[in-house]
Structures are given as structure tokens and as C-alpha cells.
Image 1 (cartoon, rainbow, N blue to C red):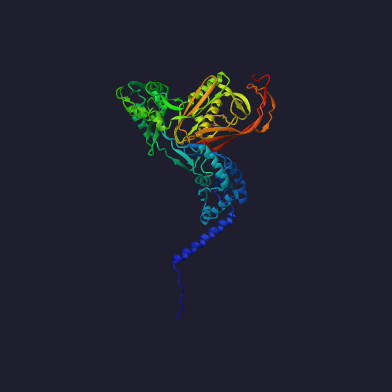
Image 2: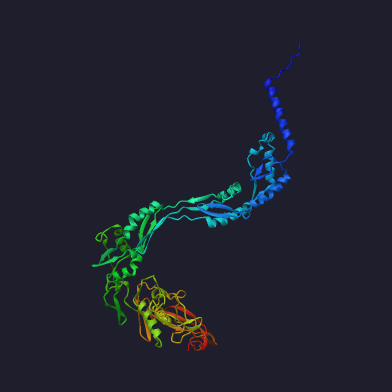
Length: 575
């Protein structure tokens, strides 16, 4: 039998021949190029074709270094800026770029194409980029501070009786993570003048341009078109657009719709409005109380008041603002009757039956004392303190300023007499303190003068300072307390009215202890006040409560006085 011979199909032979041919061409390409860069290869516009790796690195290095040092133009939202690639941690890896170019050229198809002269059509090789992410984040963070833009909401305002519009604008905030990726992938994308757009998160305004136009058309323009007229208590007065606009705003609700708001409190305090209301409104007046012996009687009846509230004023004005025509822009303000707290009928019910205590302090006449002590007495007189409530000197009298009726006087500051607004008011505080002491109510806050002043009872006196030291007491008597205060040019008296809790309250003063001697000082301060010396000492005063002829309670008040140094005022100081 003849041996069987394997046959090879013609197509397979052709394929084998082709395979051998491709291998031969690729081998030929390697032999011809010697492993150098494929002809026609470019990187960032630089032709490195046909060069060895060493030559290509040398040629590219200078070009890429220069390209990598040029500032990049960037954009965040609609704002433009620049960033230094070096500070952002960006640089080119020249050797890595050449390796990439060599790998592209070593591709069999590219190698064969180069043999047939088509290598010049190959795509440029992208440079290899190195990125230091920490530096990139730092640089981008600084960039964000200048290019980020807060969203600007559309708004409508009023000034000088005119409508002011603010167009909305979207906000942009740099997306740091995405921006780092963009730096890596887009560097050095684009040519001269190219701008790298960095990713940003956009915030759209809630109040749109359409909403601004609607608010102006439907409310703002009508509101400023003419005055409004109000009637109350049989009187009429007008409020013009300028005054209205000062207290009128439009604020967005949750959906971005602009809603008008009128500041009724501010409008009521506007000088022109306040003057108009002054002839209509009245303050309630408590019944005037006096003593018949130690019993309280009503001297003058109370008087009701008439009040226009902030809410009532706003409620009357706001609906008129979108109307047109004088008649349509006229409305009525509702007035409210306010009742006094102390009346002929309520005095006994409140427990204002008898005198609890009264104390008088005498002082040398001086214009500033007459003014300041008299003003404090005026503000304190008629104070009503309900059971369980706390009375405050500073809250009742207010800050001792010229606007509040006080002038400059002498007071103690840092252990020395000095000139200051409200000087002399401590005489009023001492009088209240002693009236409180003998009324038997609970002290909450008080402080004595730093050194002793002879006209006051030692250990039973008080001073006050706005913002730092107050005189407070709590009404723990179980009934209302009523304070009467009256001043002359040389004295001030405070009386507490209420219901007695104890038959009698007395004071026992202990001996002076820890006596300390004063020093002699010379001052040239222009506000210097001469000061006589007096020893410092400690003293304890007991408040003693008596009921049914016997002592039922004793409460100590301890006071520490520093020495009152002698102050000599020389040239440049007060005399």
C-alpha cells in the first residue's frame, strides 16, 4: 500500500507566506532603525523621529521644561485666573515620554508603515505628566478663594422712595477632586491662549429674574407710587414712600417667592410717625399713693392709656401699599386701651396696705448731685414689684447718659474720686439699699463702695456701675411692693409700701476689724479730685428680724473697705 501524503491547501500556504513576510518586515524594521525613535514621531510639536533615546531626551528636555513653567489659564464658572504648574506639582517626565514614543514606534504595524514611508502620518505622542497631588490640592485651594463665586439671589429693595433691583447670579465652587484629575489629564492641553476649564459645582439662585420682575411689577412699584393715609383717634396722618421704604423689605419664602415685610416697630419709631402718634397715644398712669400715718391711701386715681401697637400699625399699612388712588390708600389703625396696674380698686388687692420702711440720705448740695439724684428718683418712683419678681436698679434707671437726663459728676473709680457721667447716683443706690434692708426683702446683688464714705451708714451702703455692678432685690414678701422716691437739693428718701411680714427689722453694727492706714499720693491727672485720707477696715452688720416681740432671725452683711488714700492734685490736675 502506498503511503499517504498530507496535502496543504493553497490558502494556508499563502497565509504562511504572509506570516513569514510580516515577521521579515518587522525584523527588517528593527534592523534598519536600530531601536531608535520611529521617523515622523513628534511630542508637543517637537520632532524626535530618527533620534536615539539619549538624543530624544536631550532635545525634548529643554522644550518640555519651558512649556511646563508657563502659567496655565484656567476658568471656574465664569471667572478666569491663572495657576503656576510648578506650584501645583505639575511637571513632565522626559525620559518616560521618550519611552512612550519608542513603544509607539516599536509597534509592528507602525514599524512596517515606517518602512513604506508612511510614518509621518502617525499621531503625536502625548508627554508623560507627573503630578504631586498634595501640591495640586494646595494650589487649587488658593485658587478657589479667588475664583469661587457665591450665589447671588435676586432681590428687591427700597431706598429714598425708589425701587432697587438686584439681578440673580448663579454661584460656582471649585470641585477639588475633579479639578485635580483635570490638571493631570489636560496638562498641557491646548495651545497658546487656551483656557483650562476646571470642574465646578454650580448653585442656582432660588429667586429668579422672573420672580424679581414679578415682585417689582405687583408690589414694589405700587408700594412706592404714593403716600398712605391713616386715621386713628379722630386724627389723620400720612406716611410717604421714603419713610415706608426705610422699613419695607421683600424676603424670599421656601419656594423663592419674594414676600413683602413691614417693620411695624421701626415704622412706629420713625420721627414723622412718632410725632403723629404722640397726640393719640397716652401712657397708663398708676394711682398715686400716699401715707396716712403708716397706712396707704389713694391720693389720685389711675389713668388708662391708649396704645398703637407695632402689629396694628403694620396690619393697617401693608394692605394699602398695592392699591392706587388716595381713597383706596387710606385705612384705619386700631388703638388699644391699656390698663394701669395700680388702681383704687387693685391697691388693696395687691397688698399695698402700709409702709414697710423708709430711709433718707442727706448730702452736701451740688448741682450735679441735684440733677443726677433727682433724675434717678424720678425713674424709680412708682416702681411696682410683684411677688417673686426681682427689681434691678440698672434696669429701672437705665444707663447714666446725657440722653437719659444725667450729667457729669464725682464718683469712685479704682479707689479714687474722679469725674464721670452719673456721678452721685450711688447716693440713690445707698438709699434704696437701706429701704430694702429695713423692708426685709431678699438682696440678690449689691456691692459697697471700695472705701468708706462718712455720710453713709458703715456696712449698710451700696454703689452701682453700668454694665458691671447692679443693685437687685427679690420680692419675697408674698405681696406686691411699691417704691416711692423723692429728692430735694440736699436729701433723697425711698419708701417701700406693701404688707408687713415681720413686726420690726433692726440693724446691729459690729466693731471695726483689720484696720488699715491710708497712703499719700500726688496726681497730675487733669480729672484729679483732691481726697482726704481715711482708714480702711472690715465691718459686719446684722439685719435682725423681730416677730411678736422676739428675735426670730439674724442675717449678717459683711463689708470690706480699703483705705482711702490722700490725693494731692498738682499742676495739670483739677483743683
